[in-house]
Length: 147
Length: 444
Image (cartoon, rainbow over all chains, first blue to last red; front, side, top):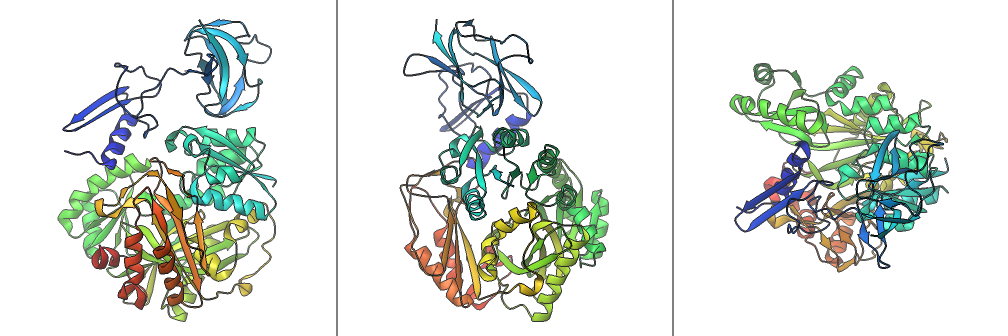
């Protein structure tokens, strides 16, 4: 059975509505491996195309820049805050060592505060936006030197 | 109004950027990541990336859109068509933050979005509606359908724009459909209310363009015929509607104005009707609160810039014309060039355009975001370009479109060009109005 474009869309819709983080569909001559954004893939070498209809294997949330620094991209559009609240100490300063689960900033979208984790291990060398600035989806938040 | 956020893509985003330029307004495109290098984004004063490709994570995020407007100091949002263009939630959220939402009042958007409530409102305003009504059970549907006579259409109150409609030819089919239709409506629209309506066998789709300034002026900018459809989706549209008797046309325009006035409509909108091709009768279908894809045919014959009017009205500037000033010159026909494979069940055909060139012809307007090297991403609708021809008469306009399609150079994706050419050259279409079944029966 060949899967049509509509079938794939339907599968994606069903996954969207479910609690499933990962799905593997195999029919004759076709295999579809979908991993929900943010979920860890059970099998790192799953063969899906990057940039395809939401069906992609997520790389760790930082990628290796040409200068060997790691960039933490903004997971969403919103307002960038370095601290939990005005006057509070920033989550990280330049020179801080971070682990993948270290909260590095908050992105506010319509009063919803979303904390952003570093996603990688490293030392902070640059904090790109100013606190209170609008950041776009994918905009660099921090640059880290890998450890 | 100084700076307008446009959370949209494709040809309509580009069209709105153009209207902003005309009015001396700055424009900010709020795009998904794959659209960040699109033509609209390049031409706008600024682009912000809302989120990744899937619309649910970008163009459908009303929170991110309002945040983007606030963060870029936009004082207005023009939503375009599709996506959140008819979302009361986005309108309300924007307005709560002091941002002008370019569209009608939130109450009118809510009313129009509830197709059943809109039907009642139109009926109260004196518009003819199709025999039918809400049904809450299969038994009730069957009783009502027996009164109306088969076939009937089962429609979702939360649907509209051709979505959520099913045809039942007899009681058994109706029984089968109502459960399914209810489940689908609940899943797709979050509203499981259904209504049943009489089917007009030989129907034309005719709609009236309304402009209302919010100060009491409600003006009809003529009508459009959009009967060339496939599965309730329009393919070719024209203005004026061919072969409408003058009296019928006047009644249709008056009726649309009455409905728009009655619901307190403001800004640019459309009242859609179904016209019985065998009798001189029309019935209210729905109200659309957005700029429509096919708006250029009305612009061509009336010489009015509808998108600029939307912005002007939202900015509380005077219209500068009255109903008496509205004129219609010649005939305009639009066809939608889609990236789809007609031979494979109209399957969308995304990809990279290696060649894209449309001939430059007198009387031809091309609204497109496509160019050689552009990518048509798989996430959105497949509209590549709207070709709009304006001529002294219908024949002339059709001839221009046929020449445009013949001279069109596209490589990289499949398109529906051959189908468009077949329709525009078909003797039935050339002879005048067709019905909404015609494409399926005579061409496909």
